[in-house]
Length: 392
Image (cartoon, rainbow, N blue to C red; front, top):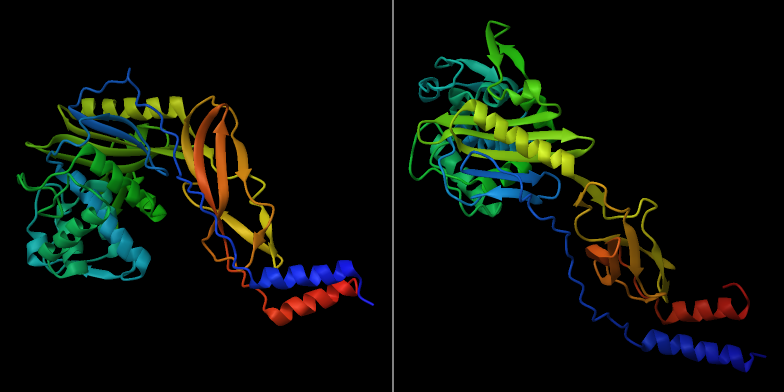
């Protein structure tokens, strides 16, 4: 005979099946820990920016949204589009590029391509990254888009996608002083960060000396920081009479990478000194803090689900920039004891608060990582039957 207690259990299970699952109305806004710019830091150039590469955290700025000519730093975007086409499989490093008469006509920084000369994408990329070759930049633009003009349209679309409000391109080289061709220190830092996201590009931007044409033509990097600044990973230099000396410099140490952008400097020496000052300041004062516990994420039990538990994921940045010497992070979970099926992937189920001492470093939403459908009526009866005979 079924006991009253087990009969009541049946009623509770059936009523739970028929009751709609409750949805949390709690609204959690993720927030990142913002470190103030270094007030004591100064650069001689009229415009500059310092950014941490993995988070995009701006650590220092000086007129960073001021529109300026940027000379060959333009090629950061040119390299980005090439890198994206390589990673997407549209082209490969072994593909052959044939120089047109127009590409071969470009002077300034160049490798003196001849009309009809053929090089691999890899060699073209090397020439652009190492010696800022204008002829190779145009050849690659034509190879990817048919004409430089169409390629420039792509450059401007990509700038818009990245949210670069102070950037506009009229060519892929930066060779010409055109009033409609400009960017800002902040925008250059953002596009540099995007370029560094393609890890293979550092195989080219960190080359100090190399050669092409079977060793017949020597290449020496225009970015001297590659040689003498520890951890330098690139990235691009530039000069014209209007832009003066410009640089997007990047360096990485112990897994943390910073980007220093300097615009309109008076000389190569002052440009490099400003970049070095920004990078030294960053490495001396900041590090990265994880926003996930090392032991991994918990899971939650699911009532009346086809799976007994659901895995969780945390949405938002995985790291934050913090001052060196900060306390170890403390992870505080706000989660229910259990969830009622159905559970939908992406459904917010709680909050992870990351603390540094008494200060909130980040507050991030915790989401269900997968769907857990609700069992049907017969599933409830099977579960009940198992409960009655002591099998569940």
